[in-house]
Image (cartoon, rainbow over all chains, first blue to last red; front, side):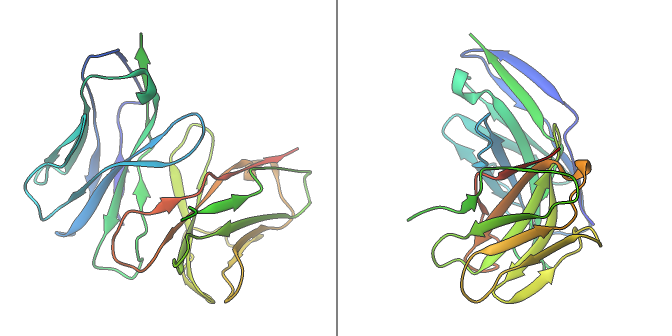
Amino acid sequence: AQTVTQSQPEMSVQEAETVTLSCTYDTSENNYYLFWYKQPPSRQMILVIRQEAYKQQNATENRFSVNFQKAAKSFSLKISDSQLGDTAMYFCAFMATNNNAGNMLTFGGGTRLMVKP
Amino acid sequence: NAGVMQNPRHLVRRRGQEARLRCSPMKGHSHVYWYRQLPEEGLKFMVYLQKENIIDESGMPKERFSAEFPKEGPSILRIQQVVRGDSAAYFCASSQVADRSPLHFGNGTRLTVT
């Protein structure tokens, strides 16, 4: 079974600055997908970014980018030019590929990010 | 194209009552996943269903919880004889096929047991 660990329960950052959220995972598989989801106070789960394990290039999506270190099983999220609207819970998630679990995700415990004006 | 629809948004039940949570997947999606989120925690997988079939229920409590996804109509998560520990947000997600694409989530149902 896979596990996902987010070691930072809470973080804060000043508006316009950069922040990095950590995520590590444990798996014996070689092919898988990793995701970051954002959950604002509205409770909606919003996909932020996706990384395929077989791709060496780190995924980027506007102000969001990841640092994917496959050997270290690390998948951190960097938010540049932080905005007040980035205030939310952020969840790291793992999706296996060689099983019968479809698109099932395993989530970390989350990091609460507060962007301060 | 409407997203994943969950209702009700909020549900209050007294201990011992039954709770029924509904999930209509995105149009064209035939795979549904239910997750539970306890306060200040991440989402925990409960069950994965396709139309008329339960594929993986490894995250479902053995008693009082059941799920279905009939040929017609929404997927239903049913909790019988609710207890205070069942209070949580319950999320539904859907996908078109098991293609490893990102899941699309509904806005969740917050169940409060009094």
